[in-house]
Length: 349
Image 1 (cartoon, helix red, strand yellow):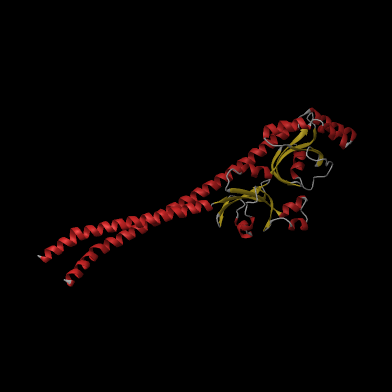
Image 2: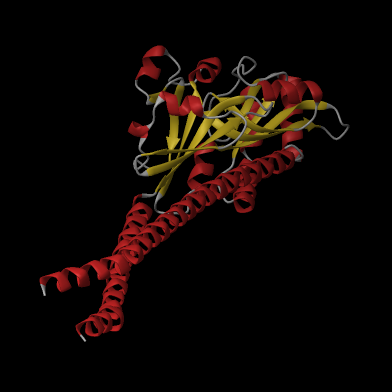
């Protein structure tokens, strides 16, 4: 009788083991393919979001620059500006001449604010690169020739220039136009600019994303910015040779950034990196002459996505094990009742 029982179990094992191994292998393959698909889909989706945001940011840059240039061309073609420049040429009285612009600039600023959606920063210059009038500061008459190549270029070529340039007040998107009188004689130039921080704040549209602007320390010293001394720079947040200029909020994890991460970034295209529970896009910033001067870092918090992905993988594993258990139980029942039991009854007869 014991021999019979052993034979029964031996028969069942011979029938079930190949099926068991096949089903386990099948479950492992299905789990592996499913996890691979989910992970790849997650990576592709996050990369799509990041690259889409980088493109959106670049479009915002272009839009703001185009608006600044259009606004500068409007500011260059008014009668009171013509009068102010001619008054200076006759009297060399900077304060009296600038006052003629100051009396009318409020209306022009309001027109630009309605057109561009932000307060206009307007700066008139005397050739080759001397400040004439600023609507955001009382400072006048300072020499800008060592730091502002765009102003020199416009007053030399008498052609419009637009793009990103570092100035004493920081990084900005600028549109600069020559100022000509009614007889097409060159008088100077005028710029309308947008602080770079305005653009990154406008680019942020999701709770889980942050942006930060970094500039190369050499560029800061070149333009003599307010904190450009060695003592001033030491107080700022630095990553390698790059200095933090602005960020959308304190949620940007500057502590996670390393010099090696920044070094990996290409100066030609967007670089996507991952650090802990964050994805980063490193977007190069190029000035009006297409030279690299800094970077924008886009940070995407993927912690919630990771938890969701892990939960999905766990559920798939549990469901697979449950299906495997049900399938094995069914097969064992069928094998014992339909194959082993009839064979045993035949042997007993």
